[in-house]
Length: 306
Image (cartoon, rainbow, N blue to C red):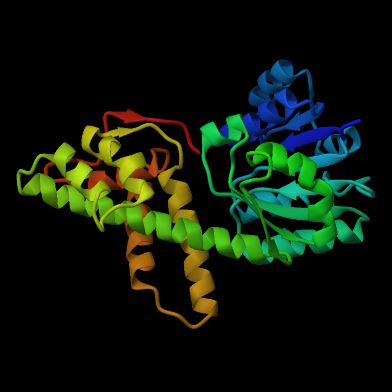
């Protein structure tokens, strides 16, 4: 029989991963979210229990996915005292999917092992549709035997394993994910500046996007964000606040390595500006609001936090 699954954090990514595994025949036994109504809604949809405590999540499942927001949230669910996923955790396996500092993943692995449990980081480089359809690009690190044991489940989330990659010991996947998001955020900021300058010059921006996509300016960001920048449609798939946070993780790694990354620093400063303007909940494409002439950084449409 397939192991029982639980999810801690059932926002749009966690909820859609849970839906995907449910569709693939894995029993989703329990969910937990700090927003209790969200947990109740998702639990009702999946036929799961909406747990009121973290310890009850661990008791209900064999494999527990955590999809939380940041370092503090990750440490909180694995707290050494009080309510915690580590209570009664012997024999359980945790799969931690948040984009957080690599050192925190190392901490969590050690804490899980002290409790007799296993831990794996499974960093995601995709978005909401891929979570629902089981086509996430998953970068994993931790103990290799733990990864091997989880392959059947992880493969269901990563196009039957085609998009599943093992990278090394704990912390490695988080380092790679930080670099992925750093480059993505820089590309987004660069596209916003290119289109903003095009707008100032009176160019046809739709034609400019098409030219960018066929030349050395091409990147996936041109396809995913270009028209949204022109149309000021910043419904959220990956929030500006998350872009700022993840750029900060990369810059901290650079500082530790003794490197100066001026493009990453400038990009983080732009996303910090959006957050300071109260626009951290719009999509990262909203950085265009800071570069297009005549805009007031108040887009027409906003989405929910990523």
